[in-house]
Length: 144
Image 1 (cartoon, rainbow, N blue to C red):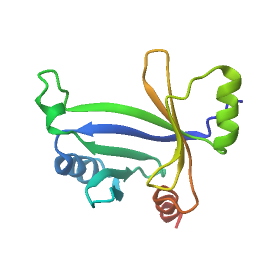
Image 2 (image 1 turned 135 degrees about the vertical axis):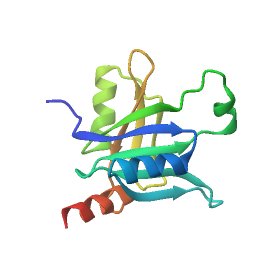
Image 3 (image 1 turned 90 degrees about the vertical axis):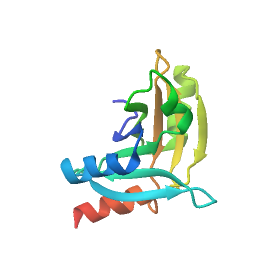
């Protein structure tokens, strides 16, 4: 068996964050789980939770992204798989010759993460959830 535990989230860059939240929450039934801000208080990411505890991660496109003539309404930035142990995951990647293209690091959500890329360059985040992360806390709420 492989190292992937379960699907973690998909990251979507959106043109209008408020309209996207309204669409996913009010029309599709996802729940606004939490938002993460940077040190200056600027909103960085919005997490919406599916009924099974998985997430859709929304990031507001910047003006430069929106001004591109070929800008899509929604683009996937990366997908995320949860792993049980980041150290074992990193050792596994080394053994398999898989290059780490980002991290490892602890994110603002307190989770351990690193990024790899598939043969087409699509980014894949590997994430070990911290017991104190907003994702874990949101998932506990689902089980209540």
